[in-house]
Image (cartoon, rainbow, N blue to C red; front, top):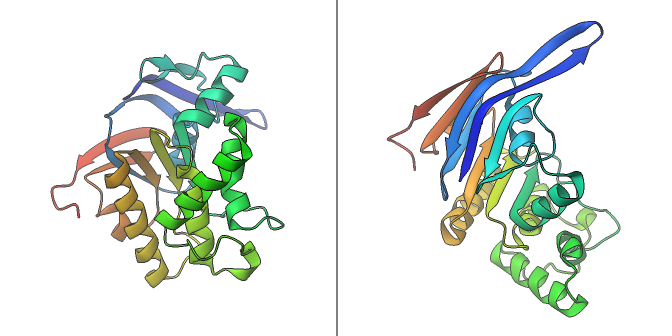
Amino acid sequence: MYQLRGVTKQYRRDKATVDALVDVDLTIGDGDRLVIQGPTGGGKSTLLQMLGGLDRPTSGSIELDGVDLAKLPEARLTTFRAESIGFVFQSFNLIPTLNAQENVETALVPLRLKAAERRERAAQALESVGLGERLGHLPSEMSGGQQQRVAIARALVKNPKVLLADEPTGNLDESMRDEIMDVLETLWKEHGLTFVMVTHDSSIARRAPRIATIRKGRITLTENSKAV
């Protein structure tokens, strides 16, 4: 479970101080699915980065299962992130010279698994997102939707507790958007993940049981009884 208390994040811009997040309190339970919305520059991606240990707050605490990510030494934070948190981004961030299976294997390298186990787990992860027959294909040989599936497989191959997604359908057309969301929602249920996603797309947000709206660094939570 995530427990955020008094999380504030400030940046320096020229001579001014910008508040990206202001005194945020938030609880995200195990297996929860939360969508984060709000205007550009309102703090959405900043919050997601904090949840993923990619950035640290100026003040406040961010606990995941009792571990304060804000206070972990960098080496321990890197290991914790590699073991517990999967990331999916708008830009697929695939390595163009590696095939699908090799791209997925990269997430397992920090875990120091043997090569044979990495290959097997990567193949299984790709099978789970419908790409079992595309293991040897390069990113340039796949559609945008297929590349995002590879990115999802890479995020989930290490069996994380948490999946964080930043505009995962932002580069996809409407039909592919719905397809990717179906994949993400199915995997969320099957793996019992804690799933937090940033999106500008209101049609996607309406599918989630909880919506966090951030404006000027402050958060408002809404329960969605009509979630899919």
